[in-house]
Length: 333
Image 1 (spheres, rainbow, N blue to C red):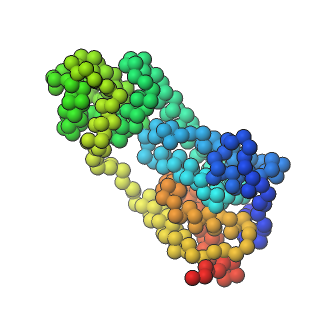
Image 2 (spheres, rainbow, N blue to C red):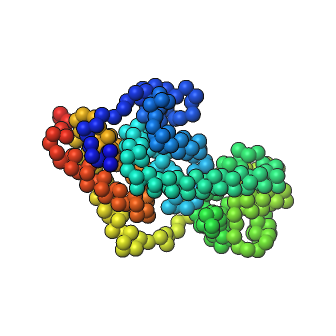
Image 3 (cartoon, one colour):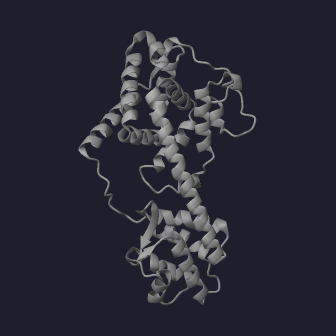
């Protein structure tokens, strides 16, 4: 491919790297590397920029809608990579020059975009239902949702929930009763779990709390402050993770950790000159220092065969660049 046949011998285009995006669509971090004069962007560069731009529109609150622990770090890693110019450039070069990465990248992007759009739509529908039933301001609902997600980490089809047993055993019910000015424990549990399923989603709990508040004698009962205060007092529920790596996944995980450790060990090596291979190397150095990028790429490396094969090849060739005296030098002390 063009990337590895030229390594550091091919100059990289820098036209427009210091220019600002006039329409303000791209974050500042993107503008240092992603924006060039439109006529200088290749078709693949345009495609890659549009993909990154798509993810730039999702907020931190949107990403929190993703409850799958194997998916949420991917969104966080994409955002973090976009904020690191060297990492963005490395991703762009790899997407443009390495076909397996491009194919796998398109597949992963399509899945992630579909998942987050669905999660955001579901959140908005849930907020609408709560607002309609309780009359609470949307900001209070959003704040309560964040608090709920810190204490409820169970997942059913990607949805967080609490069980009635947890509500009782952790002291959440007692704290809620105190905050609401409610005076009957059994009635409180019966109201918040009216359908008697034993499962409390965010919507179900908020509507139940509002019913309790309506029945309460407390003059200043405010459902919008209940969950944030509970989260502050109780904190996240401690649970043991059922997720265990099988032997094969552990092997890939350990191999990836070795790669990251190598990049950290090489951080005082500064490649000389310009070139697409050198751009990738610099991106590896910077990315290895960012926990969110490291975690996201680890999941991709472990779970996606095409990306793992590409990662192994990239590491091998980057190692050759680092160990070639004419391609690198050490910083002066």
